[in-house]
Length: 126
Image (cartoon, rainbow, N blue to C red; front, side, top):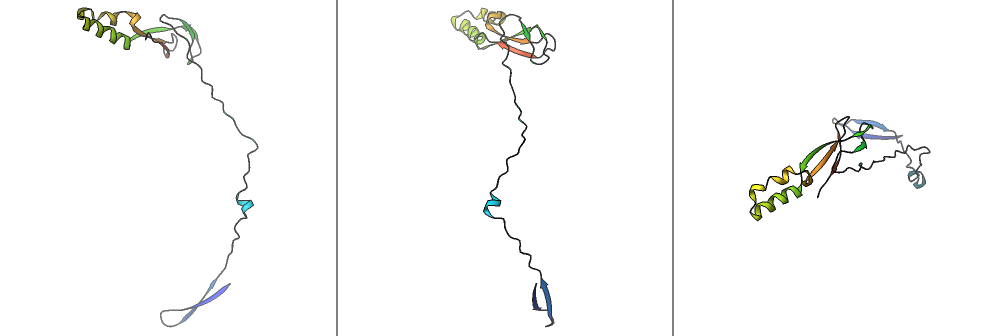
């Protein structure tokens, strides 16, 4: 222990005792030592490829409910639909521009599960 005297405000010396706590830093070998865990939990995530669907309803195994059944289809316009309508307008057949929106061959077929009604896949006509 160190003893140190300091003059106080009235000229009186006060003795303070300081405890020297010296902590030895770790050696380089201790500081850089890396311990590999002996057991590790490995998580493997496997993604399923979307089922192959076509322009018509088909039987697939739903990735959501795991039931094999016939899909429900909703058609939506695609780039091909819009291009065909624009081409009809440019050629001068503007009165027939709505026909590509009525033909399912110019549309995308969105397949939904017949059991849980969740999206299964899309058939693109482009």
